[in-house]
Length: 263
Image (cartoon, rainbow, N blue to C red; front, side, top):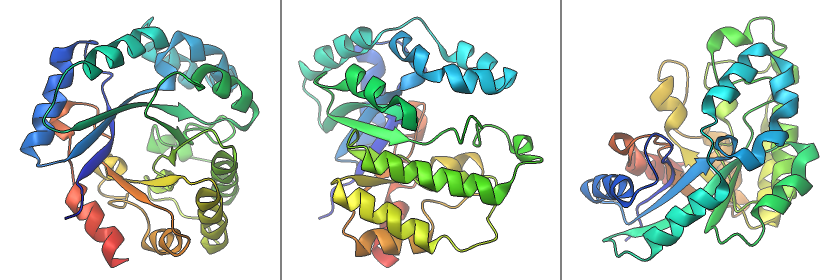
């Protein structure tokens, strides 16, 4: 029987306590999952602050958003929670990692902060395209060159996959969440991304989070053509809800698995 995994769950809205983690576990048991992978965004931690200088300078909106996300916590605070959780017993498998915003010029910085820290996995995600926070608000796309933005998004995603820093790539076509599409076919980019992921033994995050946010314009999971090309290259998939609270754990996990099987 296929193992049911929710591989992308954020714990950021609660305290670093065993009681808070237990709420995610309880929901996962209710949803009949076998494994959950809990993580935090890199932008939550003091150590990662310098990595965001360029995007903070890009717009006042991003700077304000970033400062609002910071909570004065360190990676060691998070790792202490991970150690305490690992001393407990749970009815499902738990793994802990980070979701790291990828910037091509920050690879050495990322490696220095994450290497040999004891995380079970590192998920790399593209959340900014040359400073543009494409997934925050639909109105931010006004006046944006869609073709150029897609080009830079996939070039950056390919660099992420080639970096050797990560175990998986987060929501690899989340750029589509507000319904924008380029004037050209994406097949060549899909092929290059799939080859890079396969070459670095990375998985692809089959993620329902953007659909939960933008069901009128986003797809429930990846584009079917992208799924087919990833399968052709032998890239593994991890289904995920991108939950930010216990209530959303397991959202559409079985439907996401079915999409991969049927593509």
